Image (cartoon, rainbow, N blue to C red; front, top):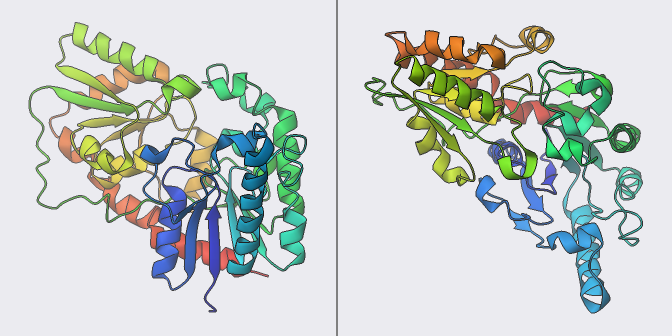
Length: 372
């Protein structure tokens, strides 16, 4: 197979572009993670190859005068270099090489680069990660439980049906491949290919000599998921109430909520946990759950049955302890009462190596890029 030159970007995304691009490099391709800017999210990222440092001013059209001229010049140079240097453009969450909105950034209005890239024979790929990328809010809000009434992004109108439809129609028109990272193939993912997330297994690997014994207080860990900017989309409130009820019932248990911990520090945080609680509202497990499973930790999340059935038609069943958020107290009580609690998560590393191995996922992506 011919070596490919692959662009991943251009916005900060936790874990995935870095894991995909590193794996593709190991597979013999040039694969770079390139950013407009980190937008203050350096702590979330494992790394990147190039950062344009545009800041949000040119993205949102708040850059004027000579500064705006030089920033637009910088974008123009960046676009020409990308066209010269890459064959495949793997975009995330509806972004492309042109960063601005049409009225606020007339030189580089978003999506207007797509017909140019396509006419030059470039392969265009869009990767959907969560509900905002490709789901109609009017449909997603019907789920029970539902995070739409909590999520500040949704309440702000940024994932309205109109915004999502406009973006996804552009993706369908110009994209060669649509990829969905979760097994919800509704709305604009009906024609997408399901490709699960990947993590860096060198960073997230269970040490065979690691002490798995649990003694004393059971430590429950949950990542907040940008609580300040998005609201309680992970369901932290449910976990707090469940843990308080367990304490009142005489159980020795503590809850540790994690927010804004640097990516490179996360392994030590997860290693310290006895139980990891992940998404309680979304309906599928996320990156934190994959990381915890890789380290052999029991993971709790809310899993929607149709999504699970679709996943299990293609991959093994995930060793995630599924629960509705209203039943979290009972689920935690049963779990922490088990004498073999430390061993319950030991199916996790094998599952992650089979389903979320970056080399396997990286190769699958290469096959999709190379398809006619």
